Length: 79
Image (cartoon, rainbow, N blue to C red; front, side):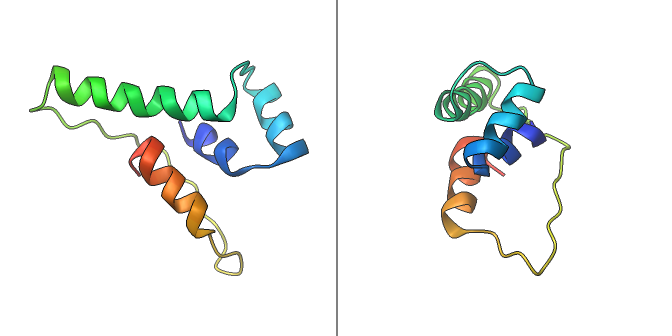
């Protein structure tokens, strides 16, 4: 999950390298949609259960996170 969120923010060559390393064949948008759908299905199936992913990516304070990337993470991965 952490590498999928990381790949979501990558562009061109970096994205291709991450997808190749993870052996992912789907597009970024398809993977984001699938994670979002999974989280929705889990919450409907068992609303009393909270699903937490324990992955984390740290960035240096010198490199601000783009607002659009943060919005994508919130929408697709509910982070």
